[in-house]
Length: 194
Image (cartoon, rainbow, N blue to C red; front, side):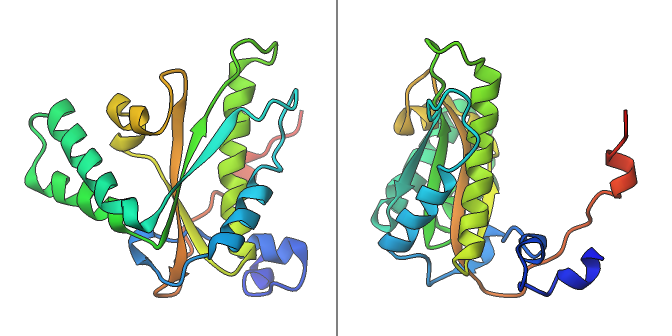
């Protein structure tokens, strides 16, 4: 049933079945304009949120701030990983400049809330997924990356508080080539009935 839907966007289910992650290095201009990005972030915020506490934040990294991001990443890497190779440093430079639009998604748990932090972190992950769906709905592709930078205290310090965590770097743009379909798990391997 789903195989026929992968190229059909005429129904909501078919549309969702066509969403694929874009490799950020393959995402080019145009990216969303300011109004489109605001719409995407509004959709991303419509995520399950027990207690209505919005335990996540979005930080948009403007194009003119990408060089500063590259400096932050490379200096943090050299400091935190003294043995980093030249290739790793070059990769971070490239990371900072890929795709026309970048949103850093932060988990921002409310520790004074009775809602368990784990539920709040799941909500932040759901906000990332909603952002990917919103980009797809607007005709763009998006890629959600983590890697070393998402776990660096120095990088986190540039975007948020010590009590927060980087959920991911969401890159958004126009695919420069057809998006790859990756292998998906066999449904009978991941679903059971109790």
